[in-house]
Image 1 (cartoon, rainbow, N blue to C red):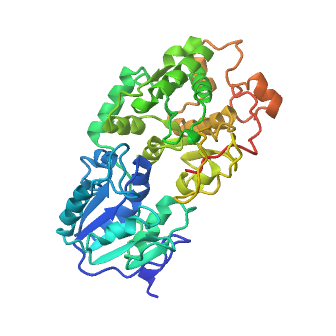
Image 2: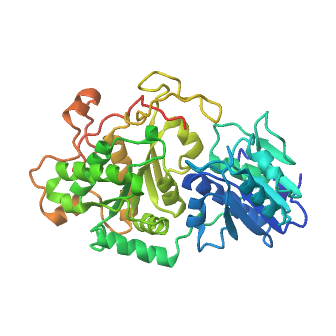
Image 3: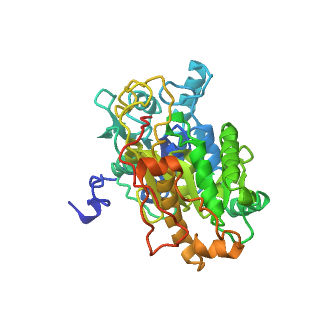
Length: 446
């Protein structure tokens, strides 16, 4: 095997032979924000391996919105028609005529390489083959139609590595570099929005919270987000809650809970939920110091633009979607294997797994103490370059904490359930005892 065909990342297969004369590439990846973010390193690898080729993404409306103004990522995004298992739009009926027009339009492009990083291939591989590309690569379950080159689809695999393993079939190695670069206009808008929300402009660190997730089972309690926001505000950190229109009620709950718990610093906690375009969201996420979130699209976007993240995950989803590094990213995991409401096994996941009817949160056994500690450590690292700390330095600047009960003490119920550990003398004395890390939790198998 020649040196340039060797594996580029341990665990991934050797690079395949590149296809000759590739001028037009089409990539199939529907879904949400996170689904696209996971595919971006693979798309960058294709662009590096075939620098003269155009790249078209067949995706969703949110993908087109995110990639608008970023021609370095792909040359075009075309929104998929409503096709079961491929392109989905809630409440929209399948239109076979529209699908046929879409397929014919793309067949006329004469693609040289079609790449399927959408799923197991039961629905997506037949759809991809209809495009008539000279070469096809992708994932495949045992019962899916084969492509020219495939890798086996096994549900529990990190989506970024899965997509990189697919494009390695075409000789594309990881390219490195930024996953998603905010535009200057987005950064300017992000700073403007944070200033208007009261979350920027005074030198304080800023943390964004995103309490939403497309699957309710992945949502950490808004009361816990509120408790965390209060702790951050107590230590002089500004907090801004973000989300789309469906997250407004959650965001309002978080803000109210935080202000009730820390009324003297209520002005440090605000919300931009429901007020942001996708471009605005990118600017805000790129402009804050840390993002605390559930397993959600905004968390994945924050990681992609280079912002540190502190996340709450069901442990199974960490395999597929958790941050790979721990220098800039931390994950608090819930270890539940059964639905809290009915006891159904939630570890059997994927397209064919049955899902119980309950939407009970499966991550609420993650404690505020654990997420606070993860977030604080990330902030310590971010702020070290400024010569500040999250604890004493910021609080002493505000001159209003002497003699008060520390917000970061566990509530009585947490102390009785978990016990209280002695503070680490190497850390600021403002960090009161933290509860032991949980050994069990709840789960989400989406």
